[in-house]
Length: 125
Image 1 (cartoon, rainbow, N blue to C red):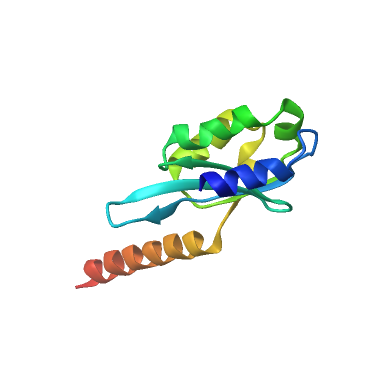
Image 2: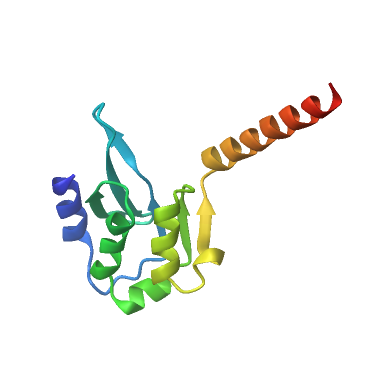
C-alpha cells in the first residue's frame, strides 16, 4: 500500500485538480483488517490509509488544497457511514456528489425486497 501511494503521489502535481474520486475499503487477511484506498479516477492512486474508520478518510483532506477539494464533482463510494460522514464534513454539497456503487445499491434493494416480502407474507397467514 505504501509503495502504491508513494508512486501515485509522485505522479501527482500539487496544482492538479481532482474532479472524480473513488473511495472503497479493501479487506485483507482473515482478521478483518482493512485498508482505505482512494483513487483519482482520472490519474490513479491518490491516498491510502489503514482501517475503514472516519479518521481513515479524514486524512485525505489534509493532502488536498482547498481548490482541489472544491473541484471535486463526483465521489464513487459504497454506503459505509463513516466515509459518508467524512465526505459530508469536508466537501461542500457532498450529498449531490456521492455516486453509490451499484453493488451496494442492489444489495440494499434486495434486503428491502426480502423484508417487504417477509412482512406481507406474515400479515396474510
